[in-house]
Length: 442
Image (cartoon, rainbow, N blue to C red):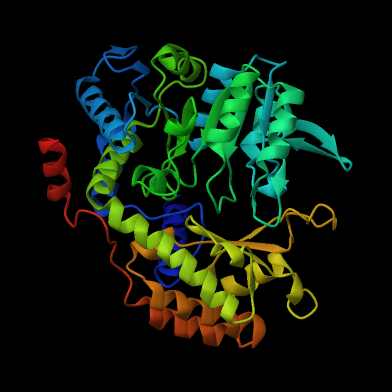
């Protein structure tokens, strides 16, 4: 067995070495600071604390309660809200908590975006389609009847007028904004008013844009009409993998708490709650500067790719207002391939991206395995210290690989050299002591 353990360790080290020399552009990923890593590796990872702070099922939670309470207070300060539940263990579980609170079990009605137009699998129904089953979380776990809001493909956003018409016709119990492909703010204020007309609650899935919102960018859902917001804590919010639900509706607090525990959760990964507390402290200190750079880099990356012959969506709108850009690579189908092919080609050179369905892929009968889109994110490269000039460099690597058809092994050597200058995590406390002093003074 010792040989097997050594094999596992070797694989882990190979992964670390690969990431060390790679350009990470996955929009749903980020990197945690040393202080956050220390908290996540604490003894909290061995413990249980079912229930709410001060109302635990287990003993031994004195210090766990202190950290969790501090985490909730920091979240409330960052988002200027009155309620935060940091127990959901992921963004999907946070979404399920909203479904539990706002919809009827097995016959409830939800409106949101479909997956090819930016929605997430956690929003999707359970249904047979084209001879296969879709096991969407909303349909499979909660049994919801899911209908879709209208989408403007040219502007990569909800169509307010057409969506309002659909809401009035379908009369959902819940309207959910947000998505996995999320370039521009959604029309929350306008459509929230329509949702309230038909008695629907309004949720906002901020998994991708949570950090941007907390730092004062993108939009402000809770003040635009959302009853509650679900958060994934490891994307633009650069923390450990976890989830959170926040709200400014005092009358909904009891329902939201019960919708998470005991409905969904037992223990809730206490080490990640500790790591999240430090992450939010970092963003209160550094988030304004960090997230401004994330958005600037995304726009600059979109411009640089466009100038090199790539079709970056929404050039007429400045490409994006978030951390993401989306590229339609169908023009390279005959010479290089589609999304899956290009994803593998870039990975050979240590550029890590993800292929992505575009709204028109379903009409063209393209699969998620090889769609016509690429979704690229700037959160992690920004936290490693890259700026606008590096976005140009990265765009040039794309050109070398996809248009010029350079040898990926040769480009990988260039990228390894390029990455040497970007090994330190920025926009964080540079020592654990600094992080803990911040928490003590809060």
